[in-house]
Image 1 (cartoon, one colour):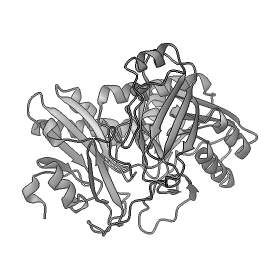
Image 2 (cartoon, rainbow, N blue to C red; image 1 turned 45 degrees about the vertical axis):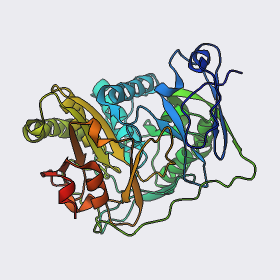
Image 3 (cartoon, one colour; image 1 turned 60 degrees about the vertical axis):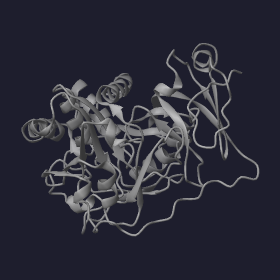
Length: 428
């Protein structure tokens, strides 16, 4: 077996093989990553000529439940991604879903925080391809408006933040009839248990579907995700599609303890709960396809009128989303790119990852919502950008001083769509 010289994280014992990328692409369907706490081995199905680093790199989690992390190079969560690269991935996922759709209504769901934008992108791609088909989108969330009782709860047991909520969906979101297709979207799957947990809760809530399509950027479950959801929904047809698939094996290092979760931190921002009245926020109560079409047009007009005139000509622009608030920031970055700028996108995250050769620099700060949770912005060097735009659902008070100081000069677009130029000197 040829072991590729892929991207390795901190404490990796790199295996020297200067021809590794070429050998992996053309001759081998195996890859091995030696981390500080163990070894991850991947067997890849049906490889094309692209190196694995076009899809992901491997870093170490600060998480005793799972020691490794697939760091997507196309998602925009831990590594800045160009808007073109991200949109191509969204379109590819929508395209490979299309052949499996029935003629009935469609419900797309995706998981907070990492896959909220991914699910919305798949939803938008299908909406454009199937404009006459009833379609709704609904995410999980970890934030609930005050006074709202969640419709259901589900778990992602291996996660650093296992509990998810699904809020009561607005009219036009849930499918009507017994011939519906449920599309569950996540960035990756290794066992299918996260999909299974949500499928069980939907069944208990009385949601009936004829088929389920599991959609991921990478699927390492060796088809076990299909079996897991079939166990939850035995009367439904279940299929899985992804950009890359295979199986994995994890061998922990003898005598080495896994990294613990990082400790909490004192709240750095006032407590904030979502306000359902905010325009252009996370659609926690869901969206119909008609809602999305109308909102996308209004958002493009808003960016054209209020944001584009502020930017330097032909600027290198980094757009930063925050937590679950990623879709409208990505659309803004895309609009900026279409208007003569070089725009990339990334988001803050609560996922704790060990710095190293994949996470080359890391800004750590208290969460935006006053919960006392550490959050991170990875692989961002402010000196590489002419303009930085940070979007937050909160007010300005939801941008912690540590983050403002690290970014320096930054445009902040708050939950009321007010735009403020701030610098390090403005941080309290």
